Image 1: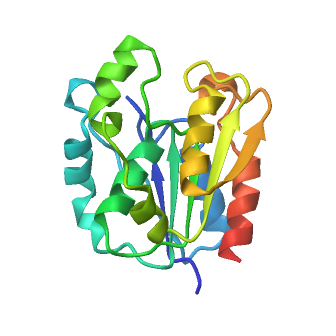
Image 2 (image 1 turned 90 degrees about the vertical axis):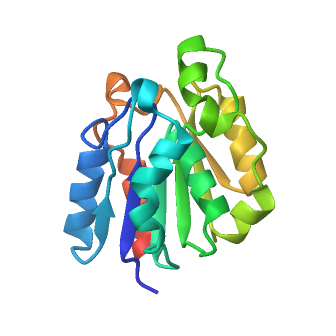
Length: 190
């Protein structure tokens, strides 16, 4: 089944115009113009909560299907996992970049992220709604330790990819492009 929709989900205090997101949207459009790439902008700062993000995402919930791919960065994967818990639909694949579902040990972020991560995830239900998970982790991420990403990979039975010296996979670490992810996506979309 051809992929028709790709969602890219930003992280804490993020937006649709940062890091490698616009570049990836453009490259996917060149590779397969028929694919719709959606990068929602979610509330940030004190307005950031799982519920406020779900409210923004609610109109898209009915469009999730077997030809959907999710890509999330940082806090984005925790949101994707929450969506997979709530939907009754199965998606094609999820690519989780620097994911975590526990506190980071950085007070300002732990406070902002608490509604997304301070809970038990229904891993069985999550896995039943996605055919294939891939987790990308960096060996020098200043925010998300590799153990936190490995925990997500183990619970989703994901393919675990370590990228050396990628920092937090953000523009501060030089990630305005993410060629490795693009190549994986091109394989997935055929």
